[in-house]
Length: 364
Image (cartoon, rainbow, N blue to C red; front, side):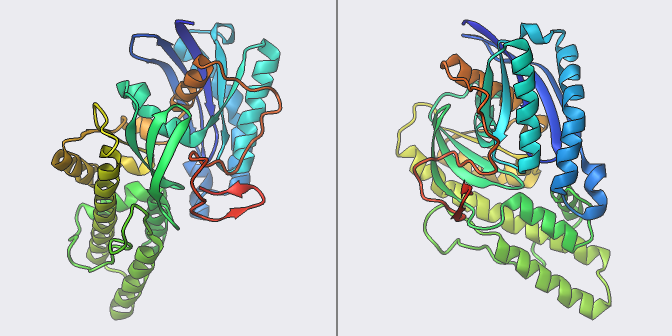
């Protein structure tokens, strides 16, 4: 079909989202609507996302979200060519809520169902926003994931490296919690860092002395904790300027690590001799301005185009799911009602697991 219109549903963590995306071959994609219901207020007192609360909120809000997305697009369910839904990875209760909602919509309307890997949604966003041509290098950097992927097609991704422990977003959240800042941690730490001295505290840059593109942020978080404890012991508390300096030093350490590892990943990617070299970055941490600036500098050095989605498409959203589903559906792929919700679902199916494996499969 030359023109496809797809409804997307996303509920993998703490954002309930629905969107409608349309694409005509040879033309830019159109995001006809994108609705996101956040849950920050529901989890605020717990200092992080509570899976059971998130799952319940998704179940209560998904139908309303879908109605609003269709209304904003000026279309009805009957106008959809397919229904795309995040089928993993993520918090299983939330993923299950979305999958069951999508199955119900599909069964009631007869519209085809397409299961989407949440990570593929992020990884394919540059094609939605910039019509990026394969192959391109993708840095997926979010609360739960951090990896370098060469996107060769909409279902073929080669991982060059990633985090072996905490993802940067997780490290930002934990840092915010350690310093008494509100969640989500990324924006809080970045805001506090603006008035801080990034050179005051000498924090480690883990794994820079090791070849390759793998990263580690757990030790950096521990070093920050120890530095904080020394300050608290000296001052019987944490002075505001010290907290700002800690945030600035931490953010700069993360930025330095990601910049150097990106440089290494780009050199490997460039060995493929792509006709239009491109680095794309997506995920919630991609919204960090210092990180973006560091990555742009690396790209300029290596003569590689840099792109990052608008902020609303960096964080979890359903437009990226609708687009990933649209690409799959255009290739003739869809799912039956046996589609399962998956807590784990690595994009690179051939590389060994980075974070260990269990009964439910490799984590990443």
